[in-house]
Picture 1: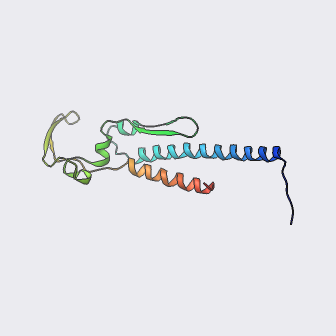
Picture 2: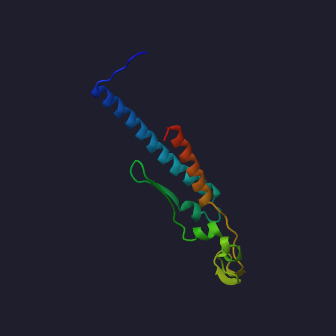
Picture 3: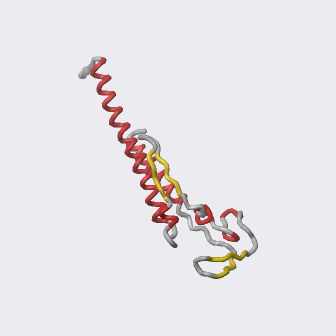
Length: 138
């Protein structure tokens, strides 16, 4: 059986190089995960005038933190639906009328079906992150 010894300094340097490489890989995984969530959300978001897709942004907060945001105020209604179509029965049960600037007339509706784009994107990001971290042995 071979005996391998490291002096304290050699071992420390080797451990530091390993740790730095590992931390760089983790930083890359965080960045790639955030980009994946952003791109998936944009790909899945319904397109009307493009403002929902344009409002999906990603920002790195240091090496190990990233934030993906959806800035459109109506995004939650797109994600979960409205009126009688709202998920979990949380919508209004009666029809309502509003003026549509796009159509230039009044419109009566019972709601809008959910068009999930955010939750599926986050789920894909979580799966990717977990897979990559497992590959690193973490």
